[in-house]
Length: 320
Image 1 (cartoon, rainbow, N blue to C red):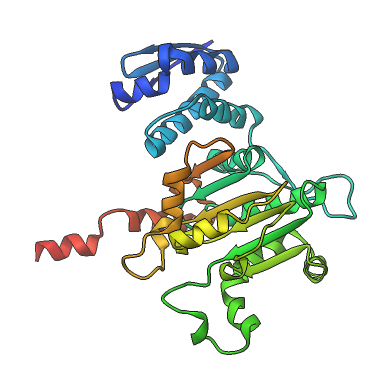
Image 2: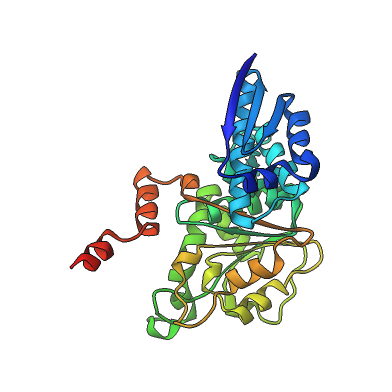
């Protein structure tokens, strides 16, 4: 048997992590089969090396949730335990002509695994975080998986046509040509998971739709998985309009990076507003990624952290 001590930031953080009368500690202990003792601002762990590693992962994720939400729920604890014990929930992407199910998207971080779990368990999931964390890619993967399993009958991929201060009227060509640059990332994600001809066939048969947000008004979508990408670029009325398109047997996923809003100055992001209003509601999941969840080139994490930190140029400017 091995032993380890997990030091926490403060007594207040410990109280949130332990739960009322240590209920969260007991749940972790029973699920992982370890001995846990919470004292002050630390947790003493005794178990096998694997059990201690799992406990450290669970506590790390729960601490991140406390930082994001300011609190923990029993559902949060159960979700994190499920993610750690399952070793990352896989998203099946087997093609129509393969029965072995050998192709999968496996979450590469604990945050991504929580995201996949949230999409499986909730009718509406919000995922926010920096570039390169797989927000869109995993959502499209889940949509393809559910379509092939027959859990939904169609996929609807949506994006607001607002970027870098431009509007559709500034772009050349007809409406198809105008919206294509905005929807290109969704095409790219689909084509990474399905053969190009199959994507085209599904789109021709209206099984897959890729549309600008403005085209969603007045619709009710049943038996569909609907993904809104770049949700930070929606206004509050636009987000309300989108969320109320949810029909019978459908699920929604909303992704975005609040730090990359291209809305005109003074407009509050519909994504931030929706997360604040709806967090904690039944059947609604909220997953927040950090730079640790970035799975692109290693430089991307360094770039994101550099932009989150106080600017070196700004600090040098203050000294002059």
